Image (cartoon, rainbow, N blue to C red; front, side, top):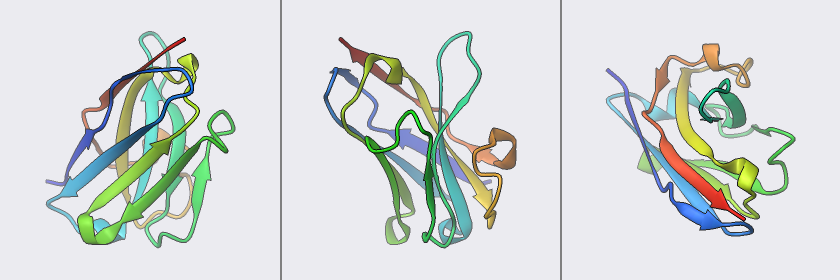
Length: 125
C-alpha cells in the first residue's frame, strides 16, 4: 500500500513562508503525478498545485500562482510545496495526493488514488 505523509504545517503570520513536504513510501515515486489540495471545515477540497510524473509540467491554482511553487525530488521520494506571501485565506488542512502516470485531470481530486492525512496551515493577520 502506497503511503503518503505530509509535514511542515504550522501557524504563521501573514506574508510569512512555509515549505510543506510529502514523503511517499511503498511505491515507485517517480511514476506518480502529485497534487496538493487544501480544505477548510465546511468547504470542499480545493486544488492548490500539481506536478506531473515526468516533472516537466506544473500547475498552480490562480489563487496561489506567483506565491506557491510545487516541485519534486525523486531521489528523496518527496514532493514539496513552497508557500510564500501567505495570506489568512490560505489557512486550511493541506493534503498531498498521488496518481499513477496521469498527465491530465490533475486539478480534480477524484483523479488521485492515494492521499496523505494532511497537515494544518494557519495564517493569522
